[in-house]
Length: 400
Image 1 (cartoon, rainbow, N blue to C red):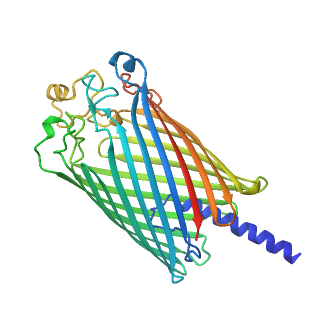
Image 2 (cartoon, helix red, strand yellow):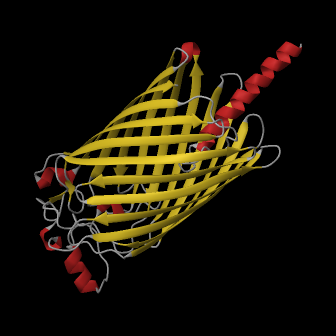
């Protein structure tokens, strides 16, 4: 009887640990949220990602341009090492290459033969974090760096967690600062932007989160983030494009994870609300289900819905943004379709397999489709063509 109770207790502990780990995924990377003890083993993970997008519809047929747009190949290496039983150090290095070009304006460009971005772009990025573990919480400090031919980003972060005596409630706090620089003298940049000095942008972010264990099978999480940015927000590849030099963003996210006893699976439900001073309001609903299978297999199907309103200064298709701005007296204007109103559905699946005690391999596929009339209001820009994207990720992880 005692042996049976011990086994059941171990199952509950593992189940709760899985729920907490999945909740921690929503917090800043520097945070090992909800973990009050330093990891006993290190981890090395190698990931490869291939992304491809395209557009279709009447605009594609009349513009005389290829459907294919951008292809991205990315390779990422992550290493986490425990130190002295109370610390951990984590580092991630990423290299990605981009081929193709995105439209200069709505969907296929304005005029029709204009496009932005250069083929063969390379980006290098890395981040480093150090975490100290205490009996009731953690404290993490991190830094990040990213560089491509026309853009450099530098960042620092500080975050921490604090749990109550029962460890059923965990409070998370975090702050981050980024300094970005864009080089307007890059040859591929629109001509009118050349011969200008580099522009900069400074972004400060703050996070507050609460994770609450409701039962052995349920955990809930609420996260609020606030971001203030000032500097160059215009896109030099989309001329004319003039955006405000200040942007405030607010995000509210809630998540509920529930573990099902009989199938030994976990459902992950999340909702995210976003708003900013550009006038964009966005909703994201995400559903995942993690199912453990015999012989070390695991499968995770997922589906996501996203909807956003248009920015206040977005200029619809058919109008030259610069001319429209002059006629309507607009101070800011942009024909960037990413600032239009639209809705999007994505679906995918991740399959993972344990390879012995130390290795795990995983493959993830995701498909994304975006349309102007899929938004909550249904009032998007009808001139925007359908946007499609898919990405494939392959990973290999080893415990040290």
